[in-house]
Length: 123
Image (tube, rainbow, N blue to C red; front, top):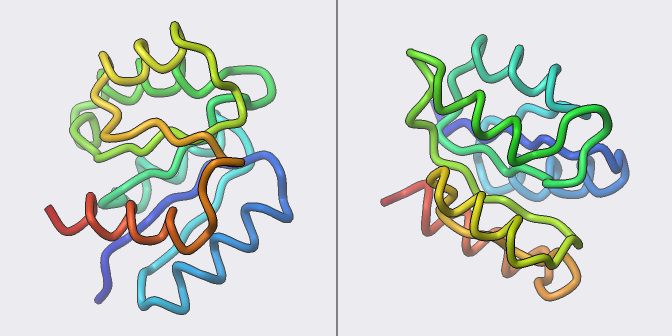
C-alpha cells in the first residue's frame, strides 16, 4: 500500500488536480473541502502527510493545525501548508505548529509541489 496523502483544499478544481497528480505517482489520496471534513478524514485514514490550504471556509488552516496537534493518534502527522495568503504571521504560526513547509500556491508549479511533498513524506 502506498503512502497516504490528505488534501484539504476548498477550491475543488485545484483539489482534483492535485488528487490526480498524487494518485498518478502511486500515493493513496484523500480529499476534504473544509477543516471539519479534513479532521474527520484524518482521524479515519491516518494520512502520512496533509497538504493543507490555509484559507478555508469556517475554520482556517492554522486553527485546524492547532486542533490536529492535540489529537492523540494523528497529532504528529506531517503537514505542508499552502496558500495564496502570503502573510508573515500566518507563516510563523503554521511553522510554530510544526508545518514542514509553507508554500505560496502561485510561486510553485504542481510539479514543484509534488517534489516538495515527496521529499517530506519520505523523510
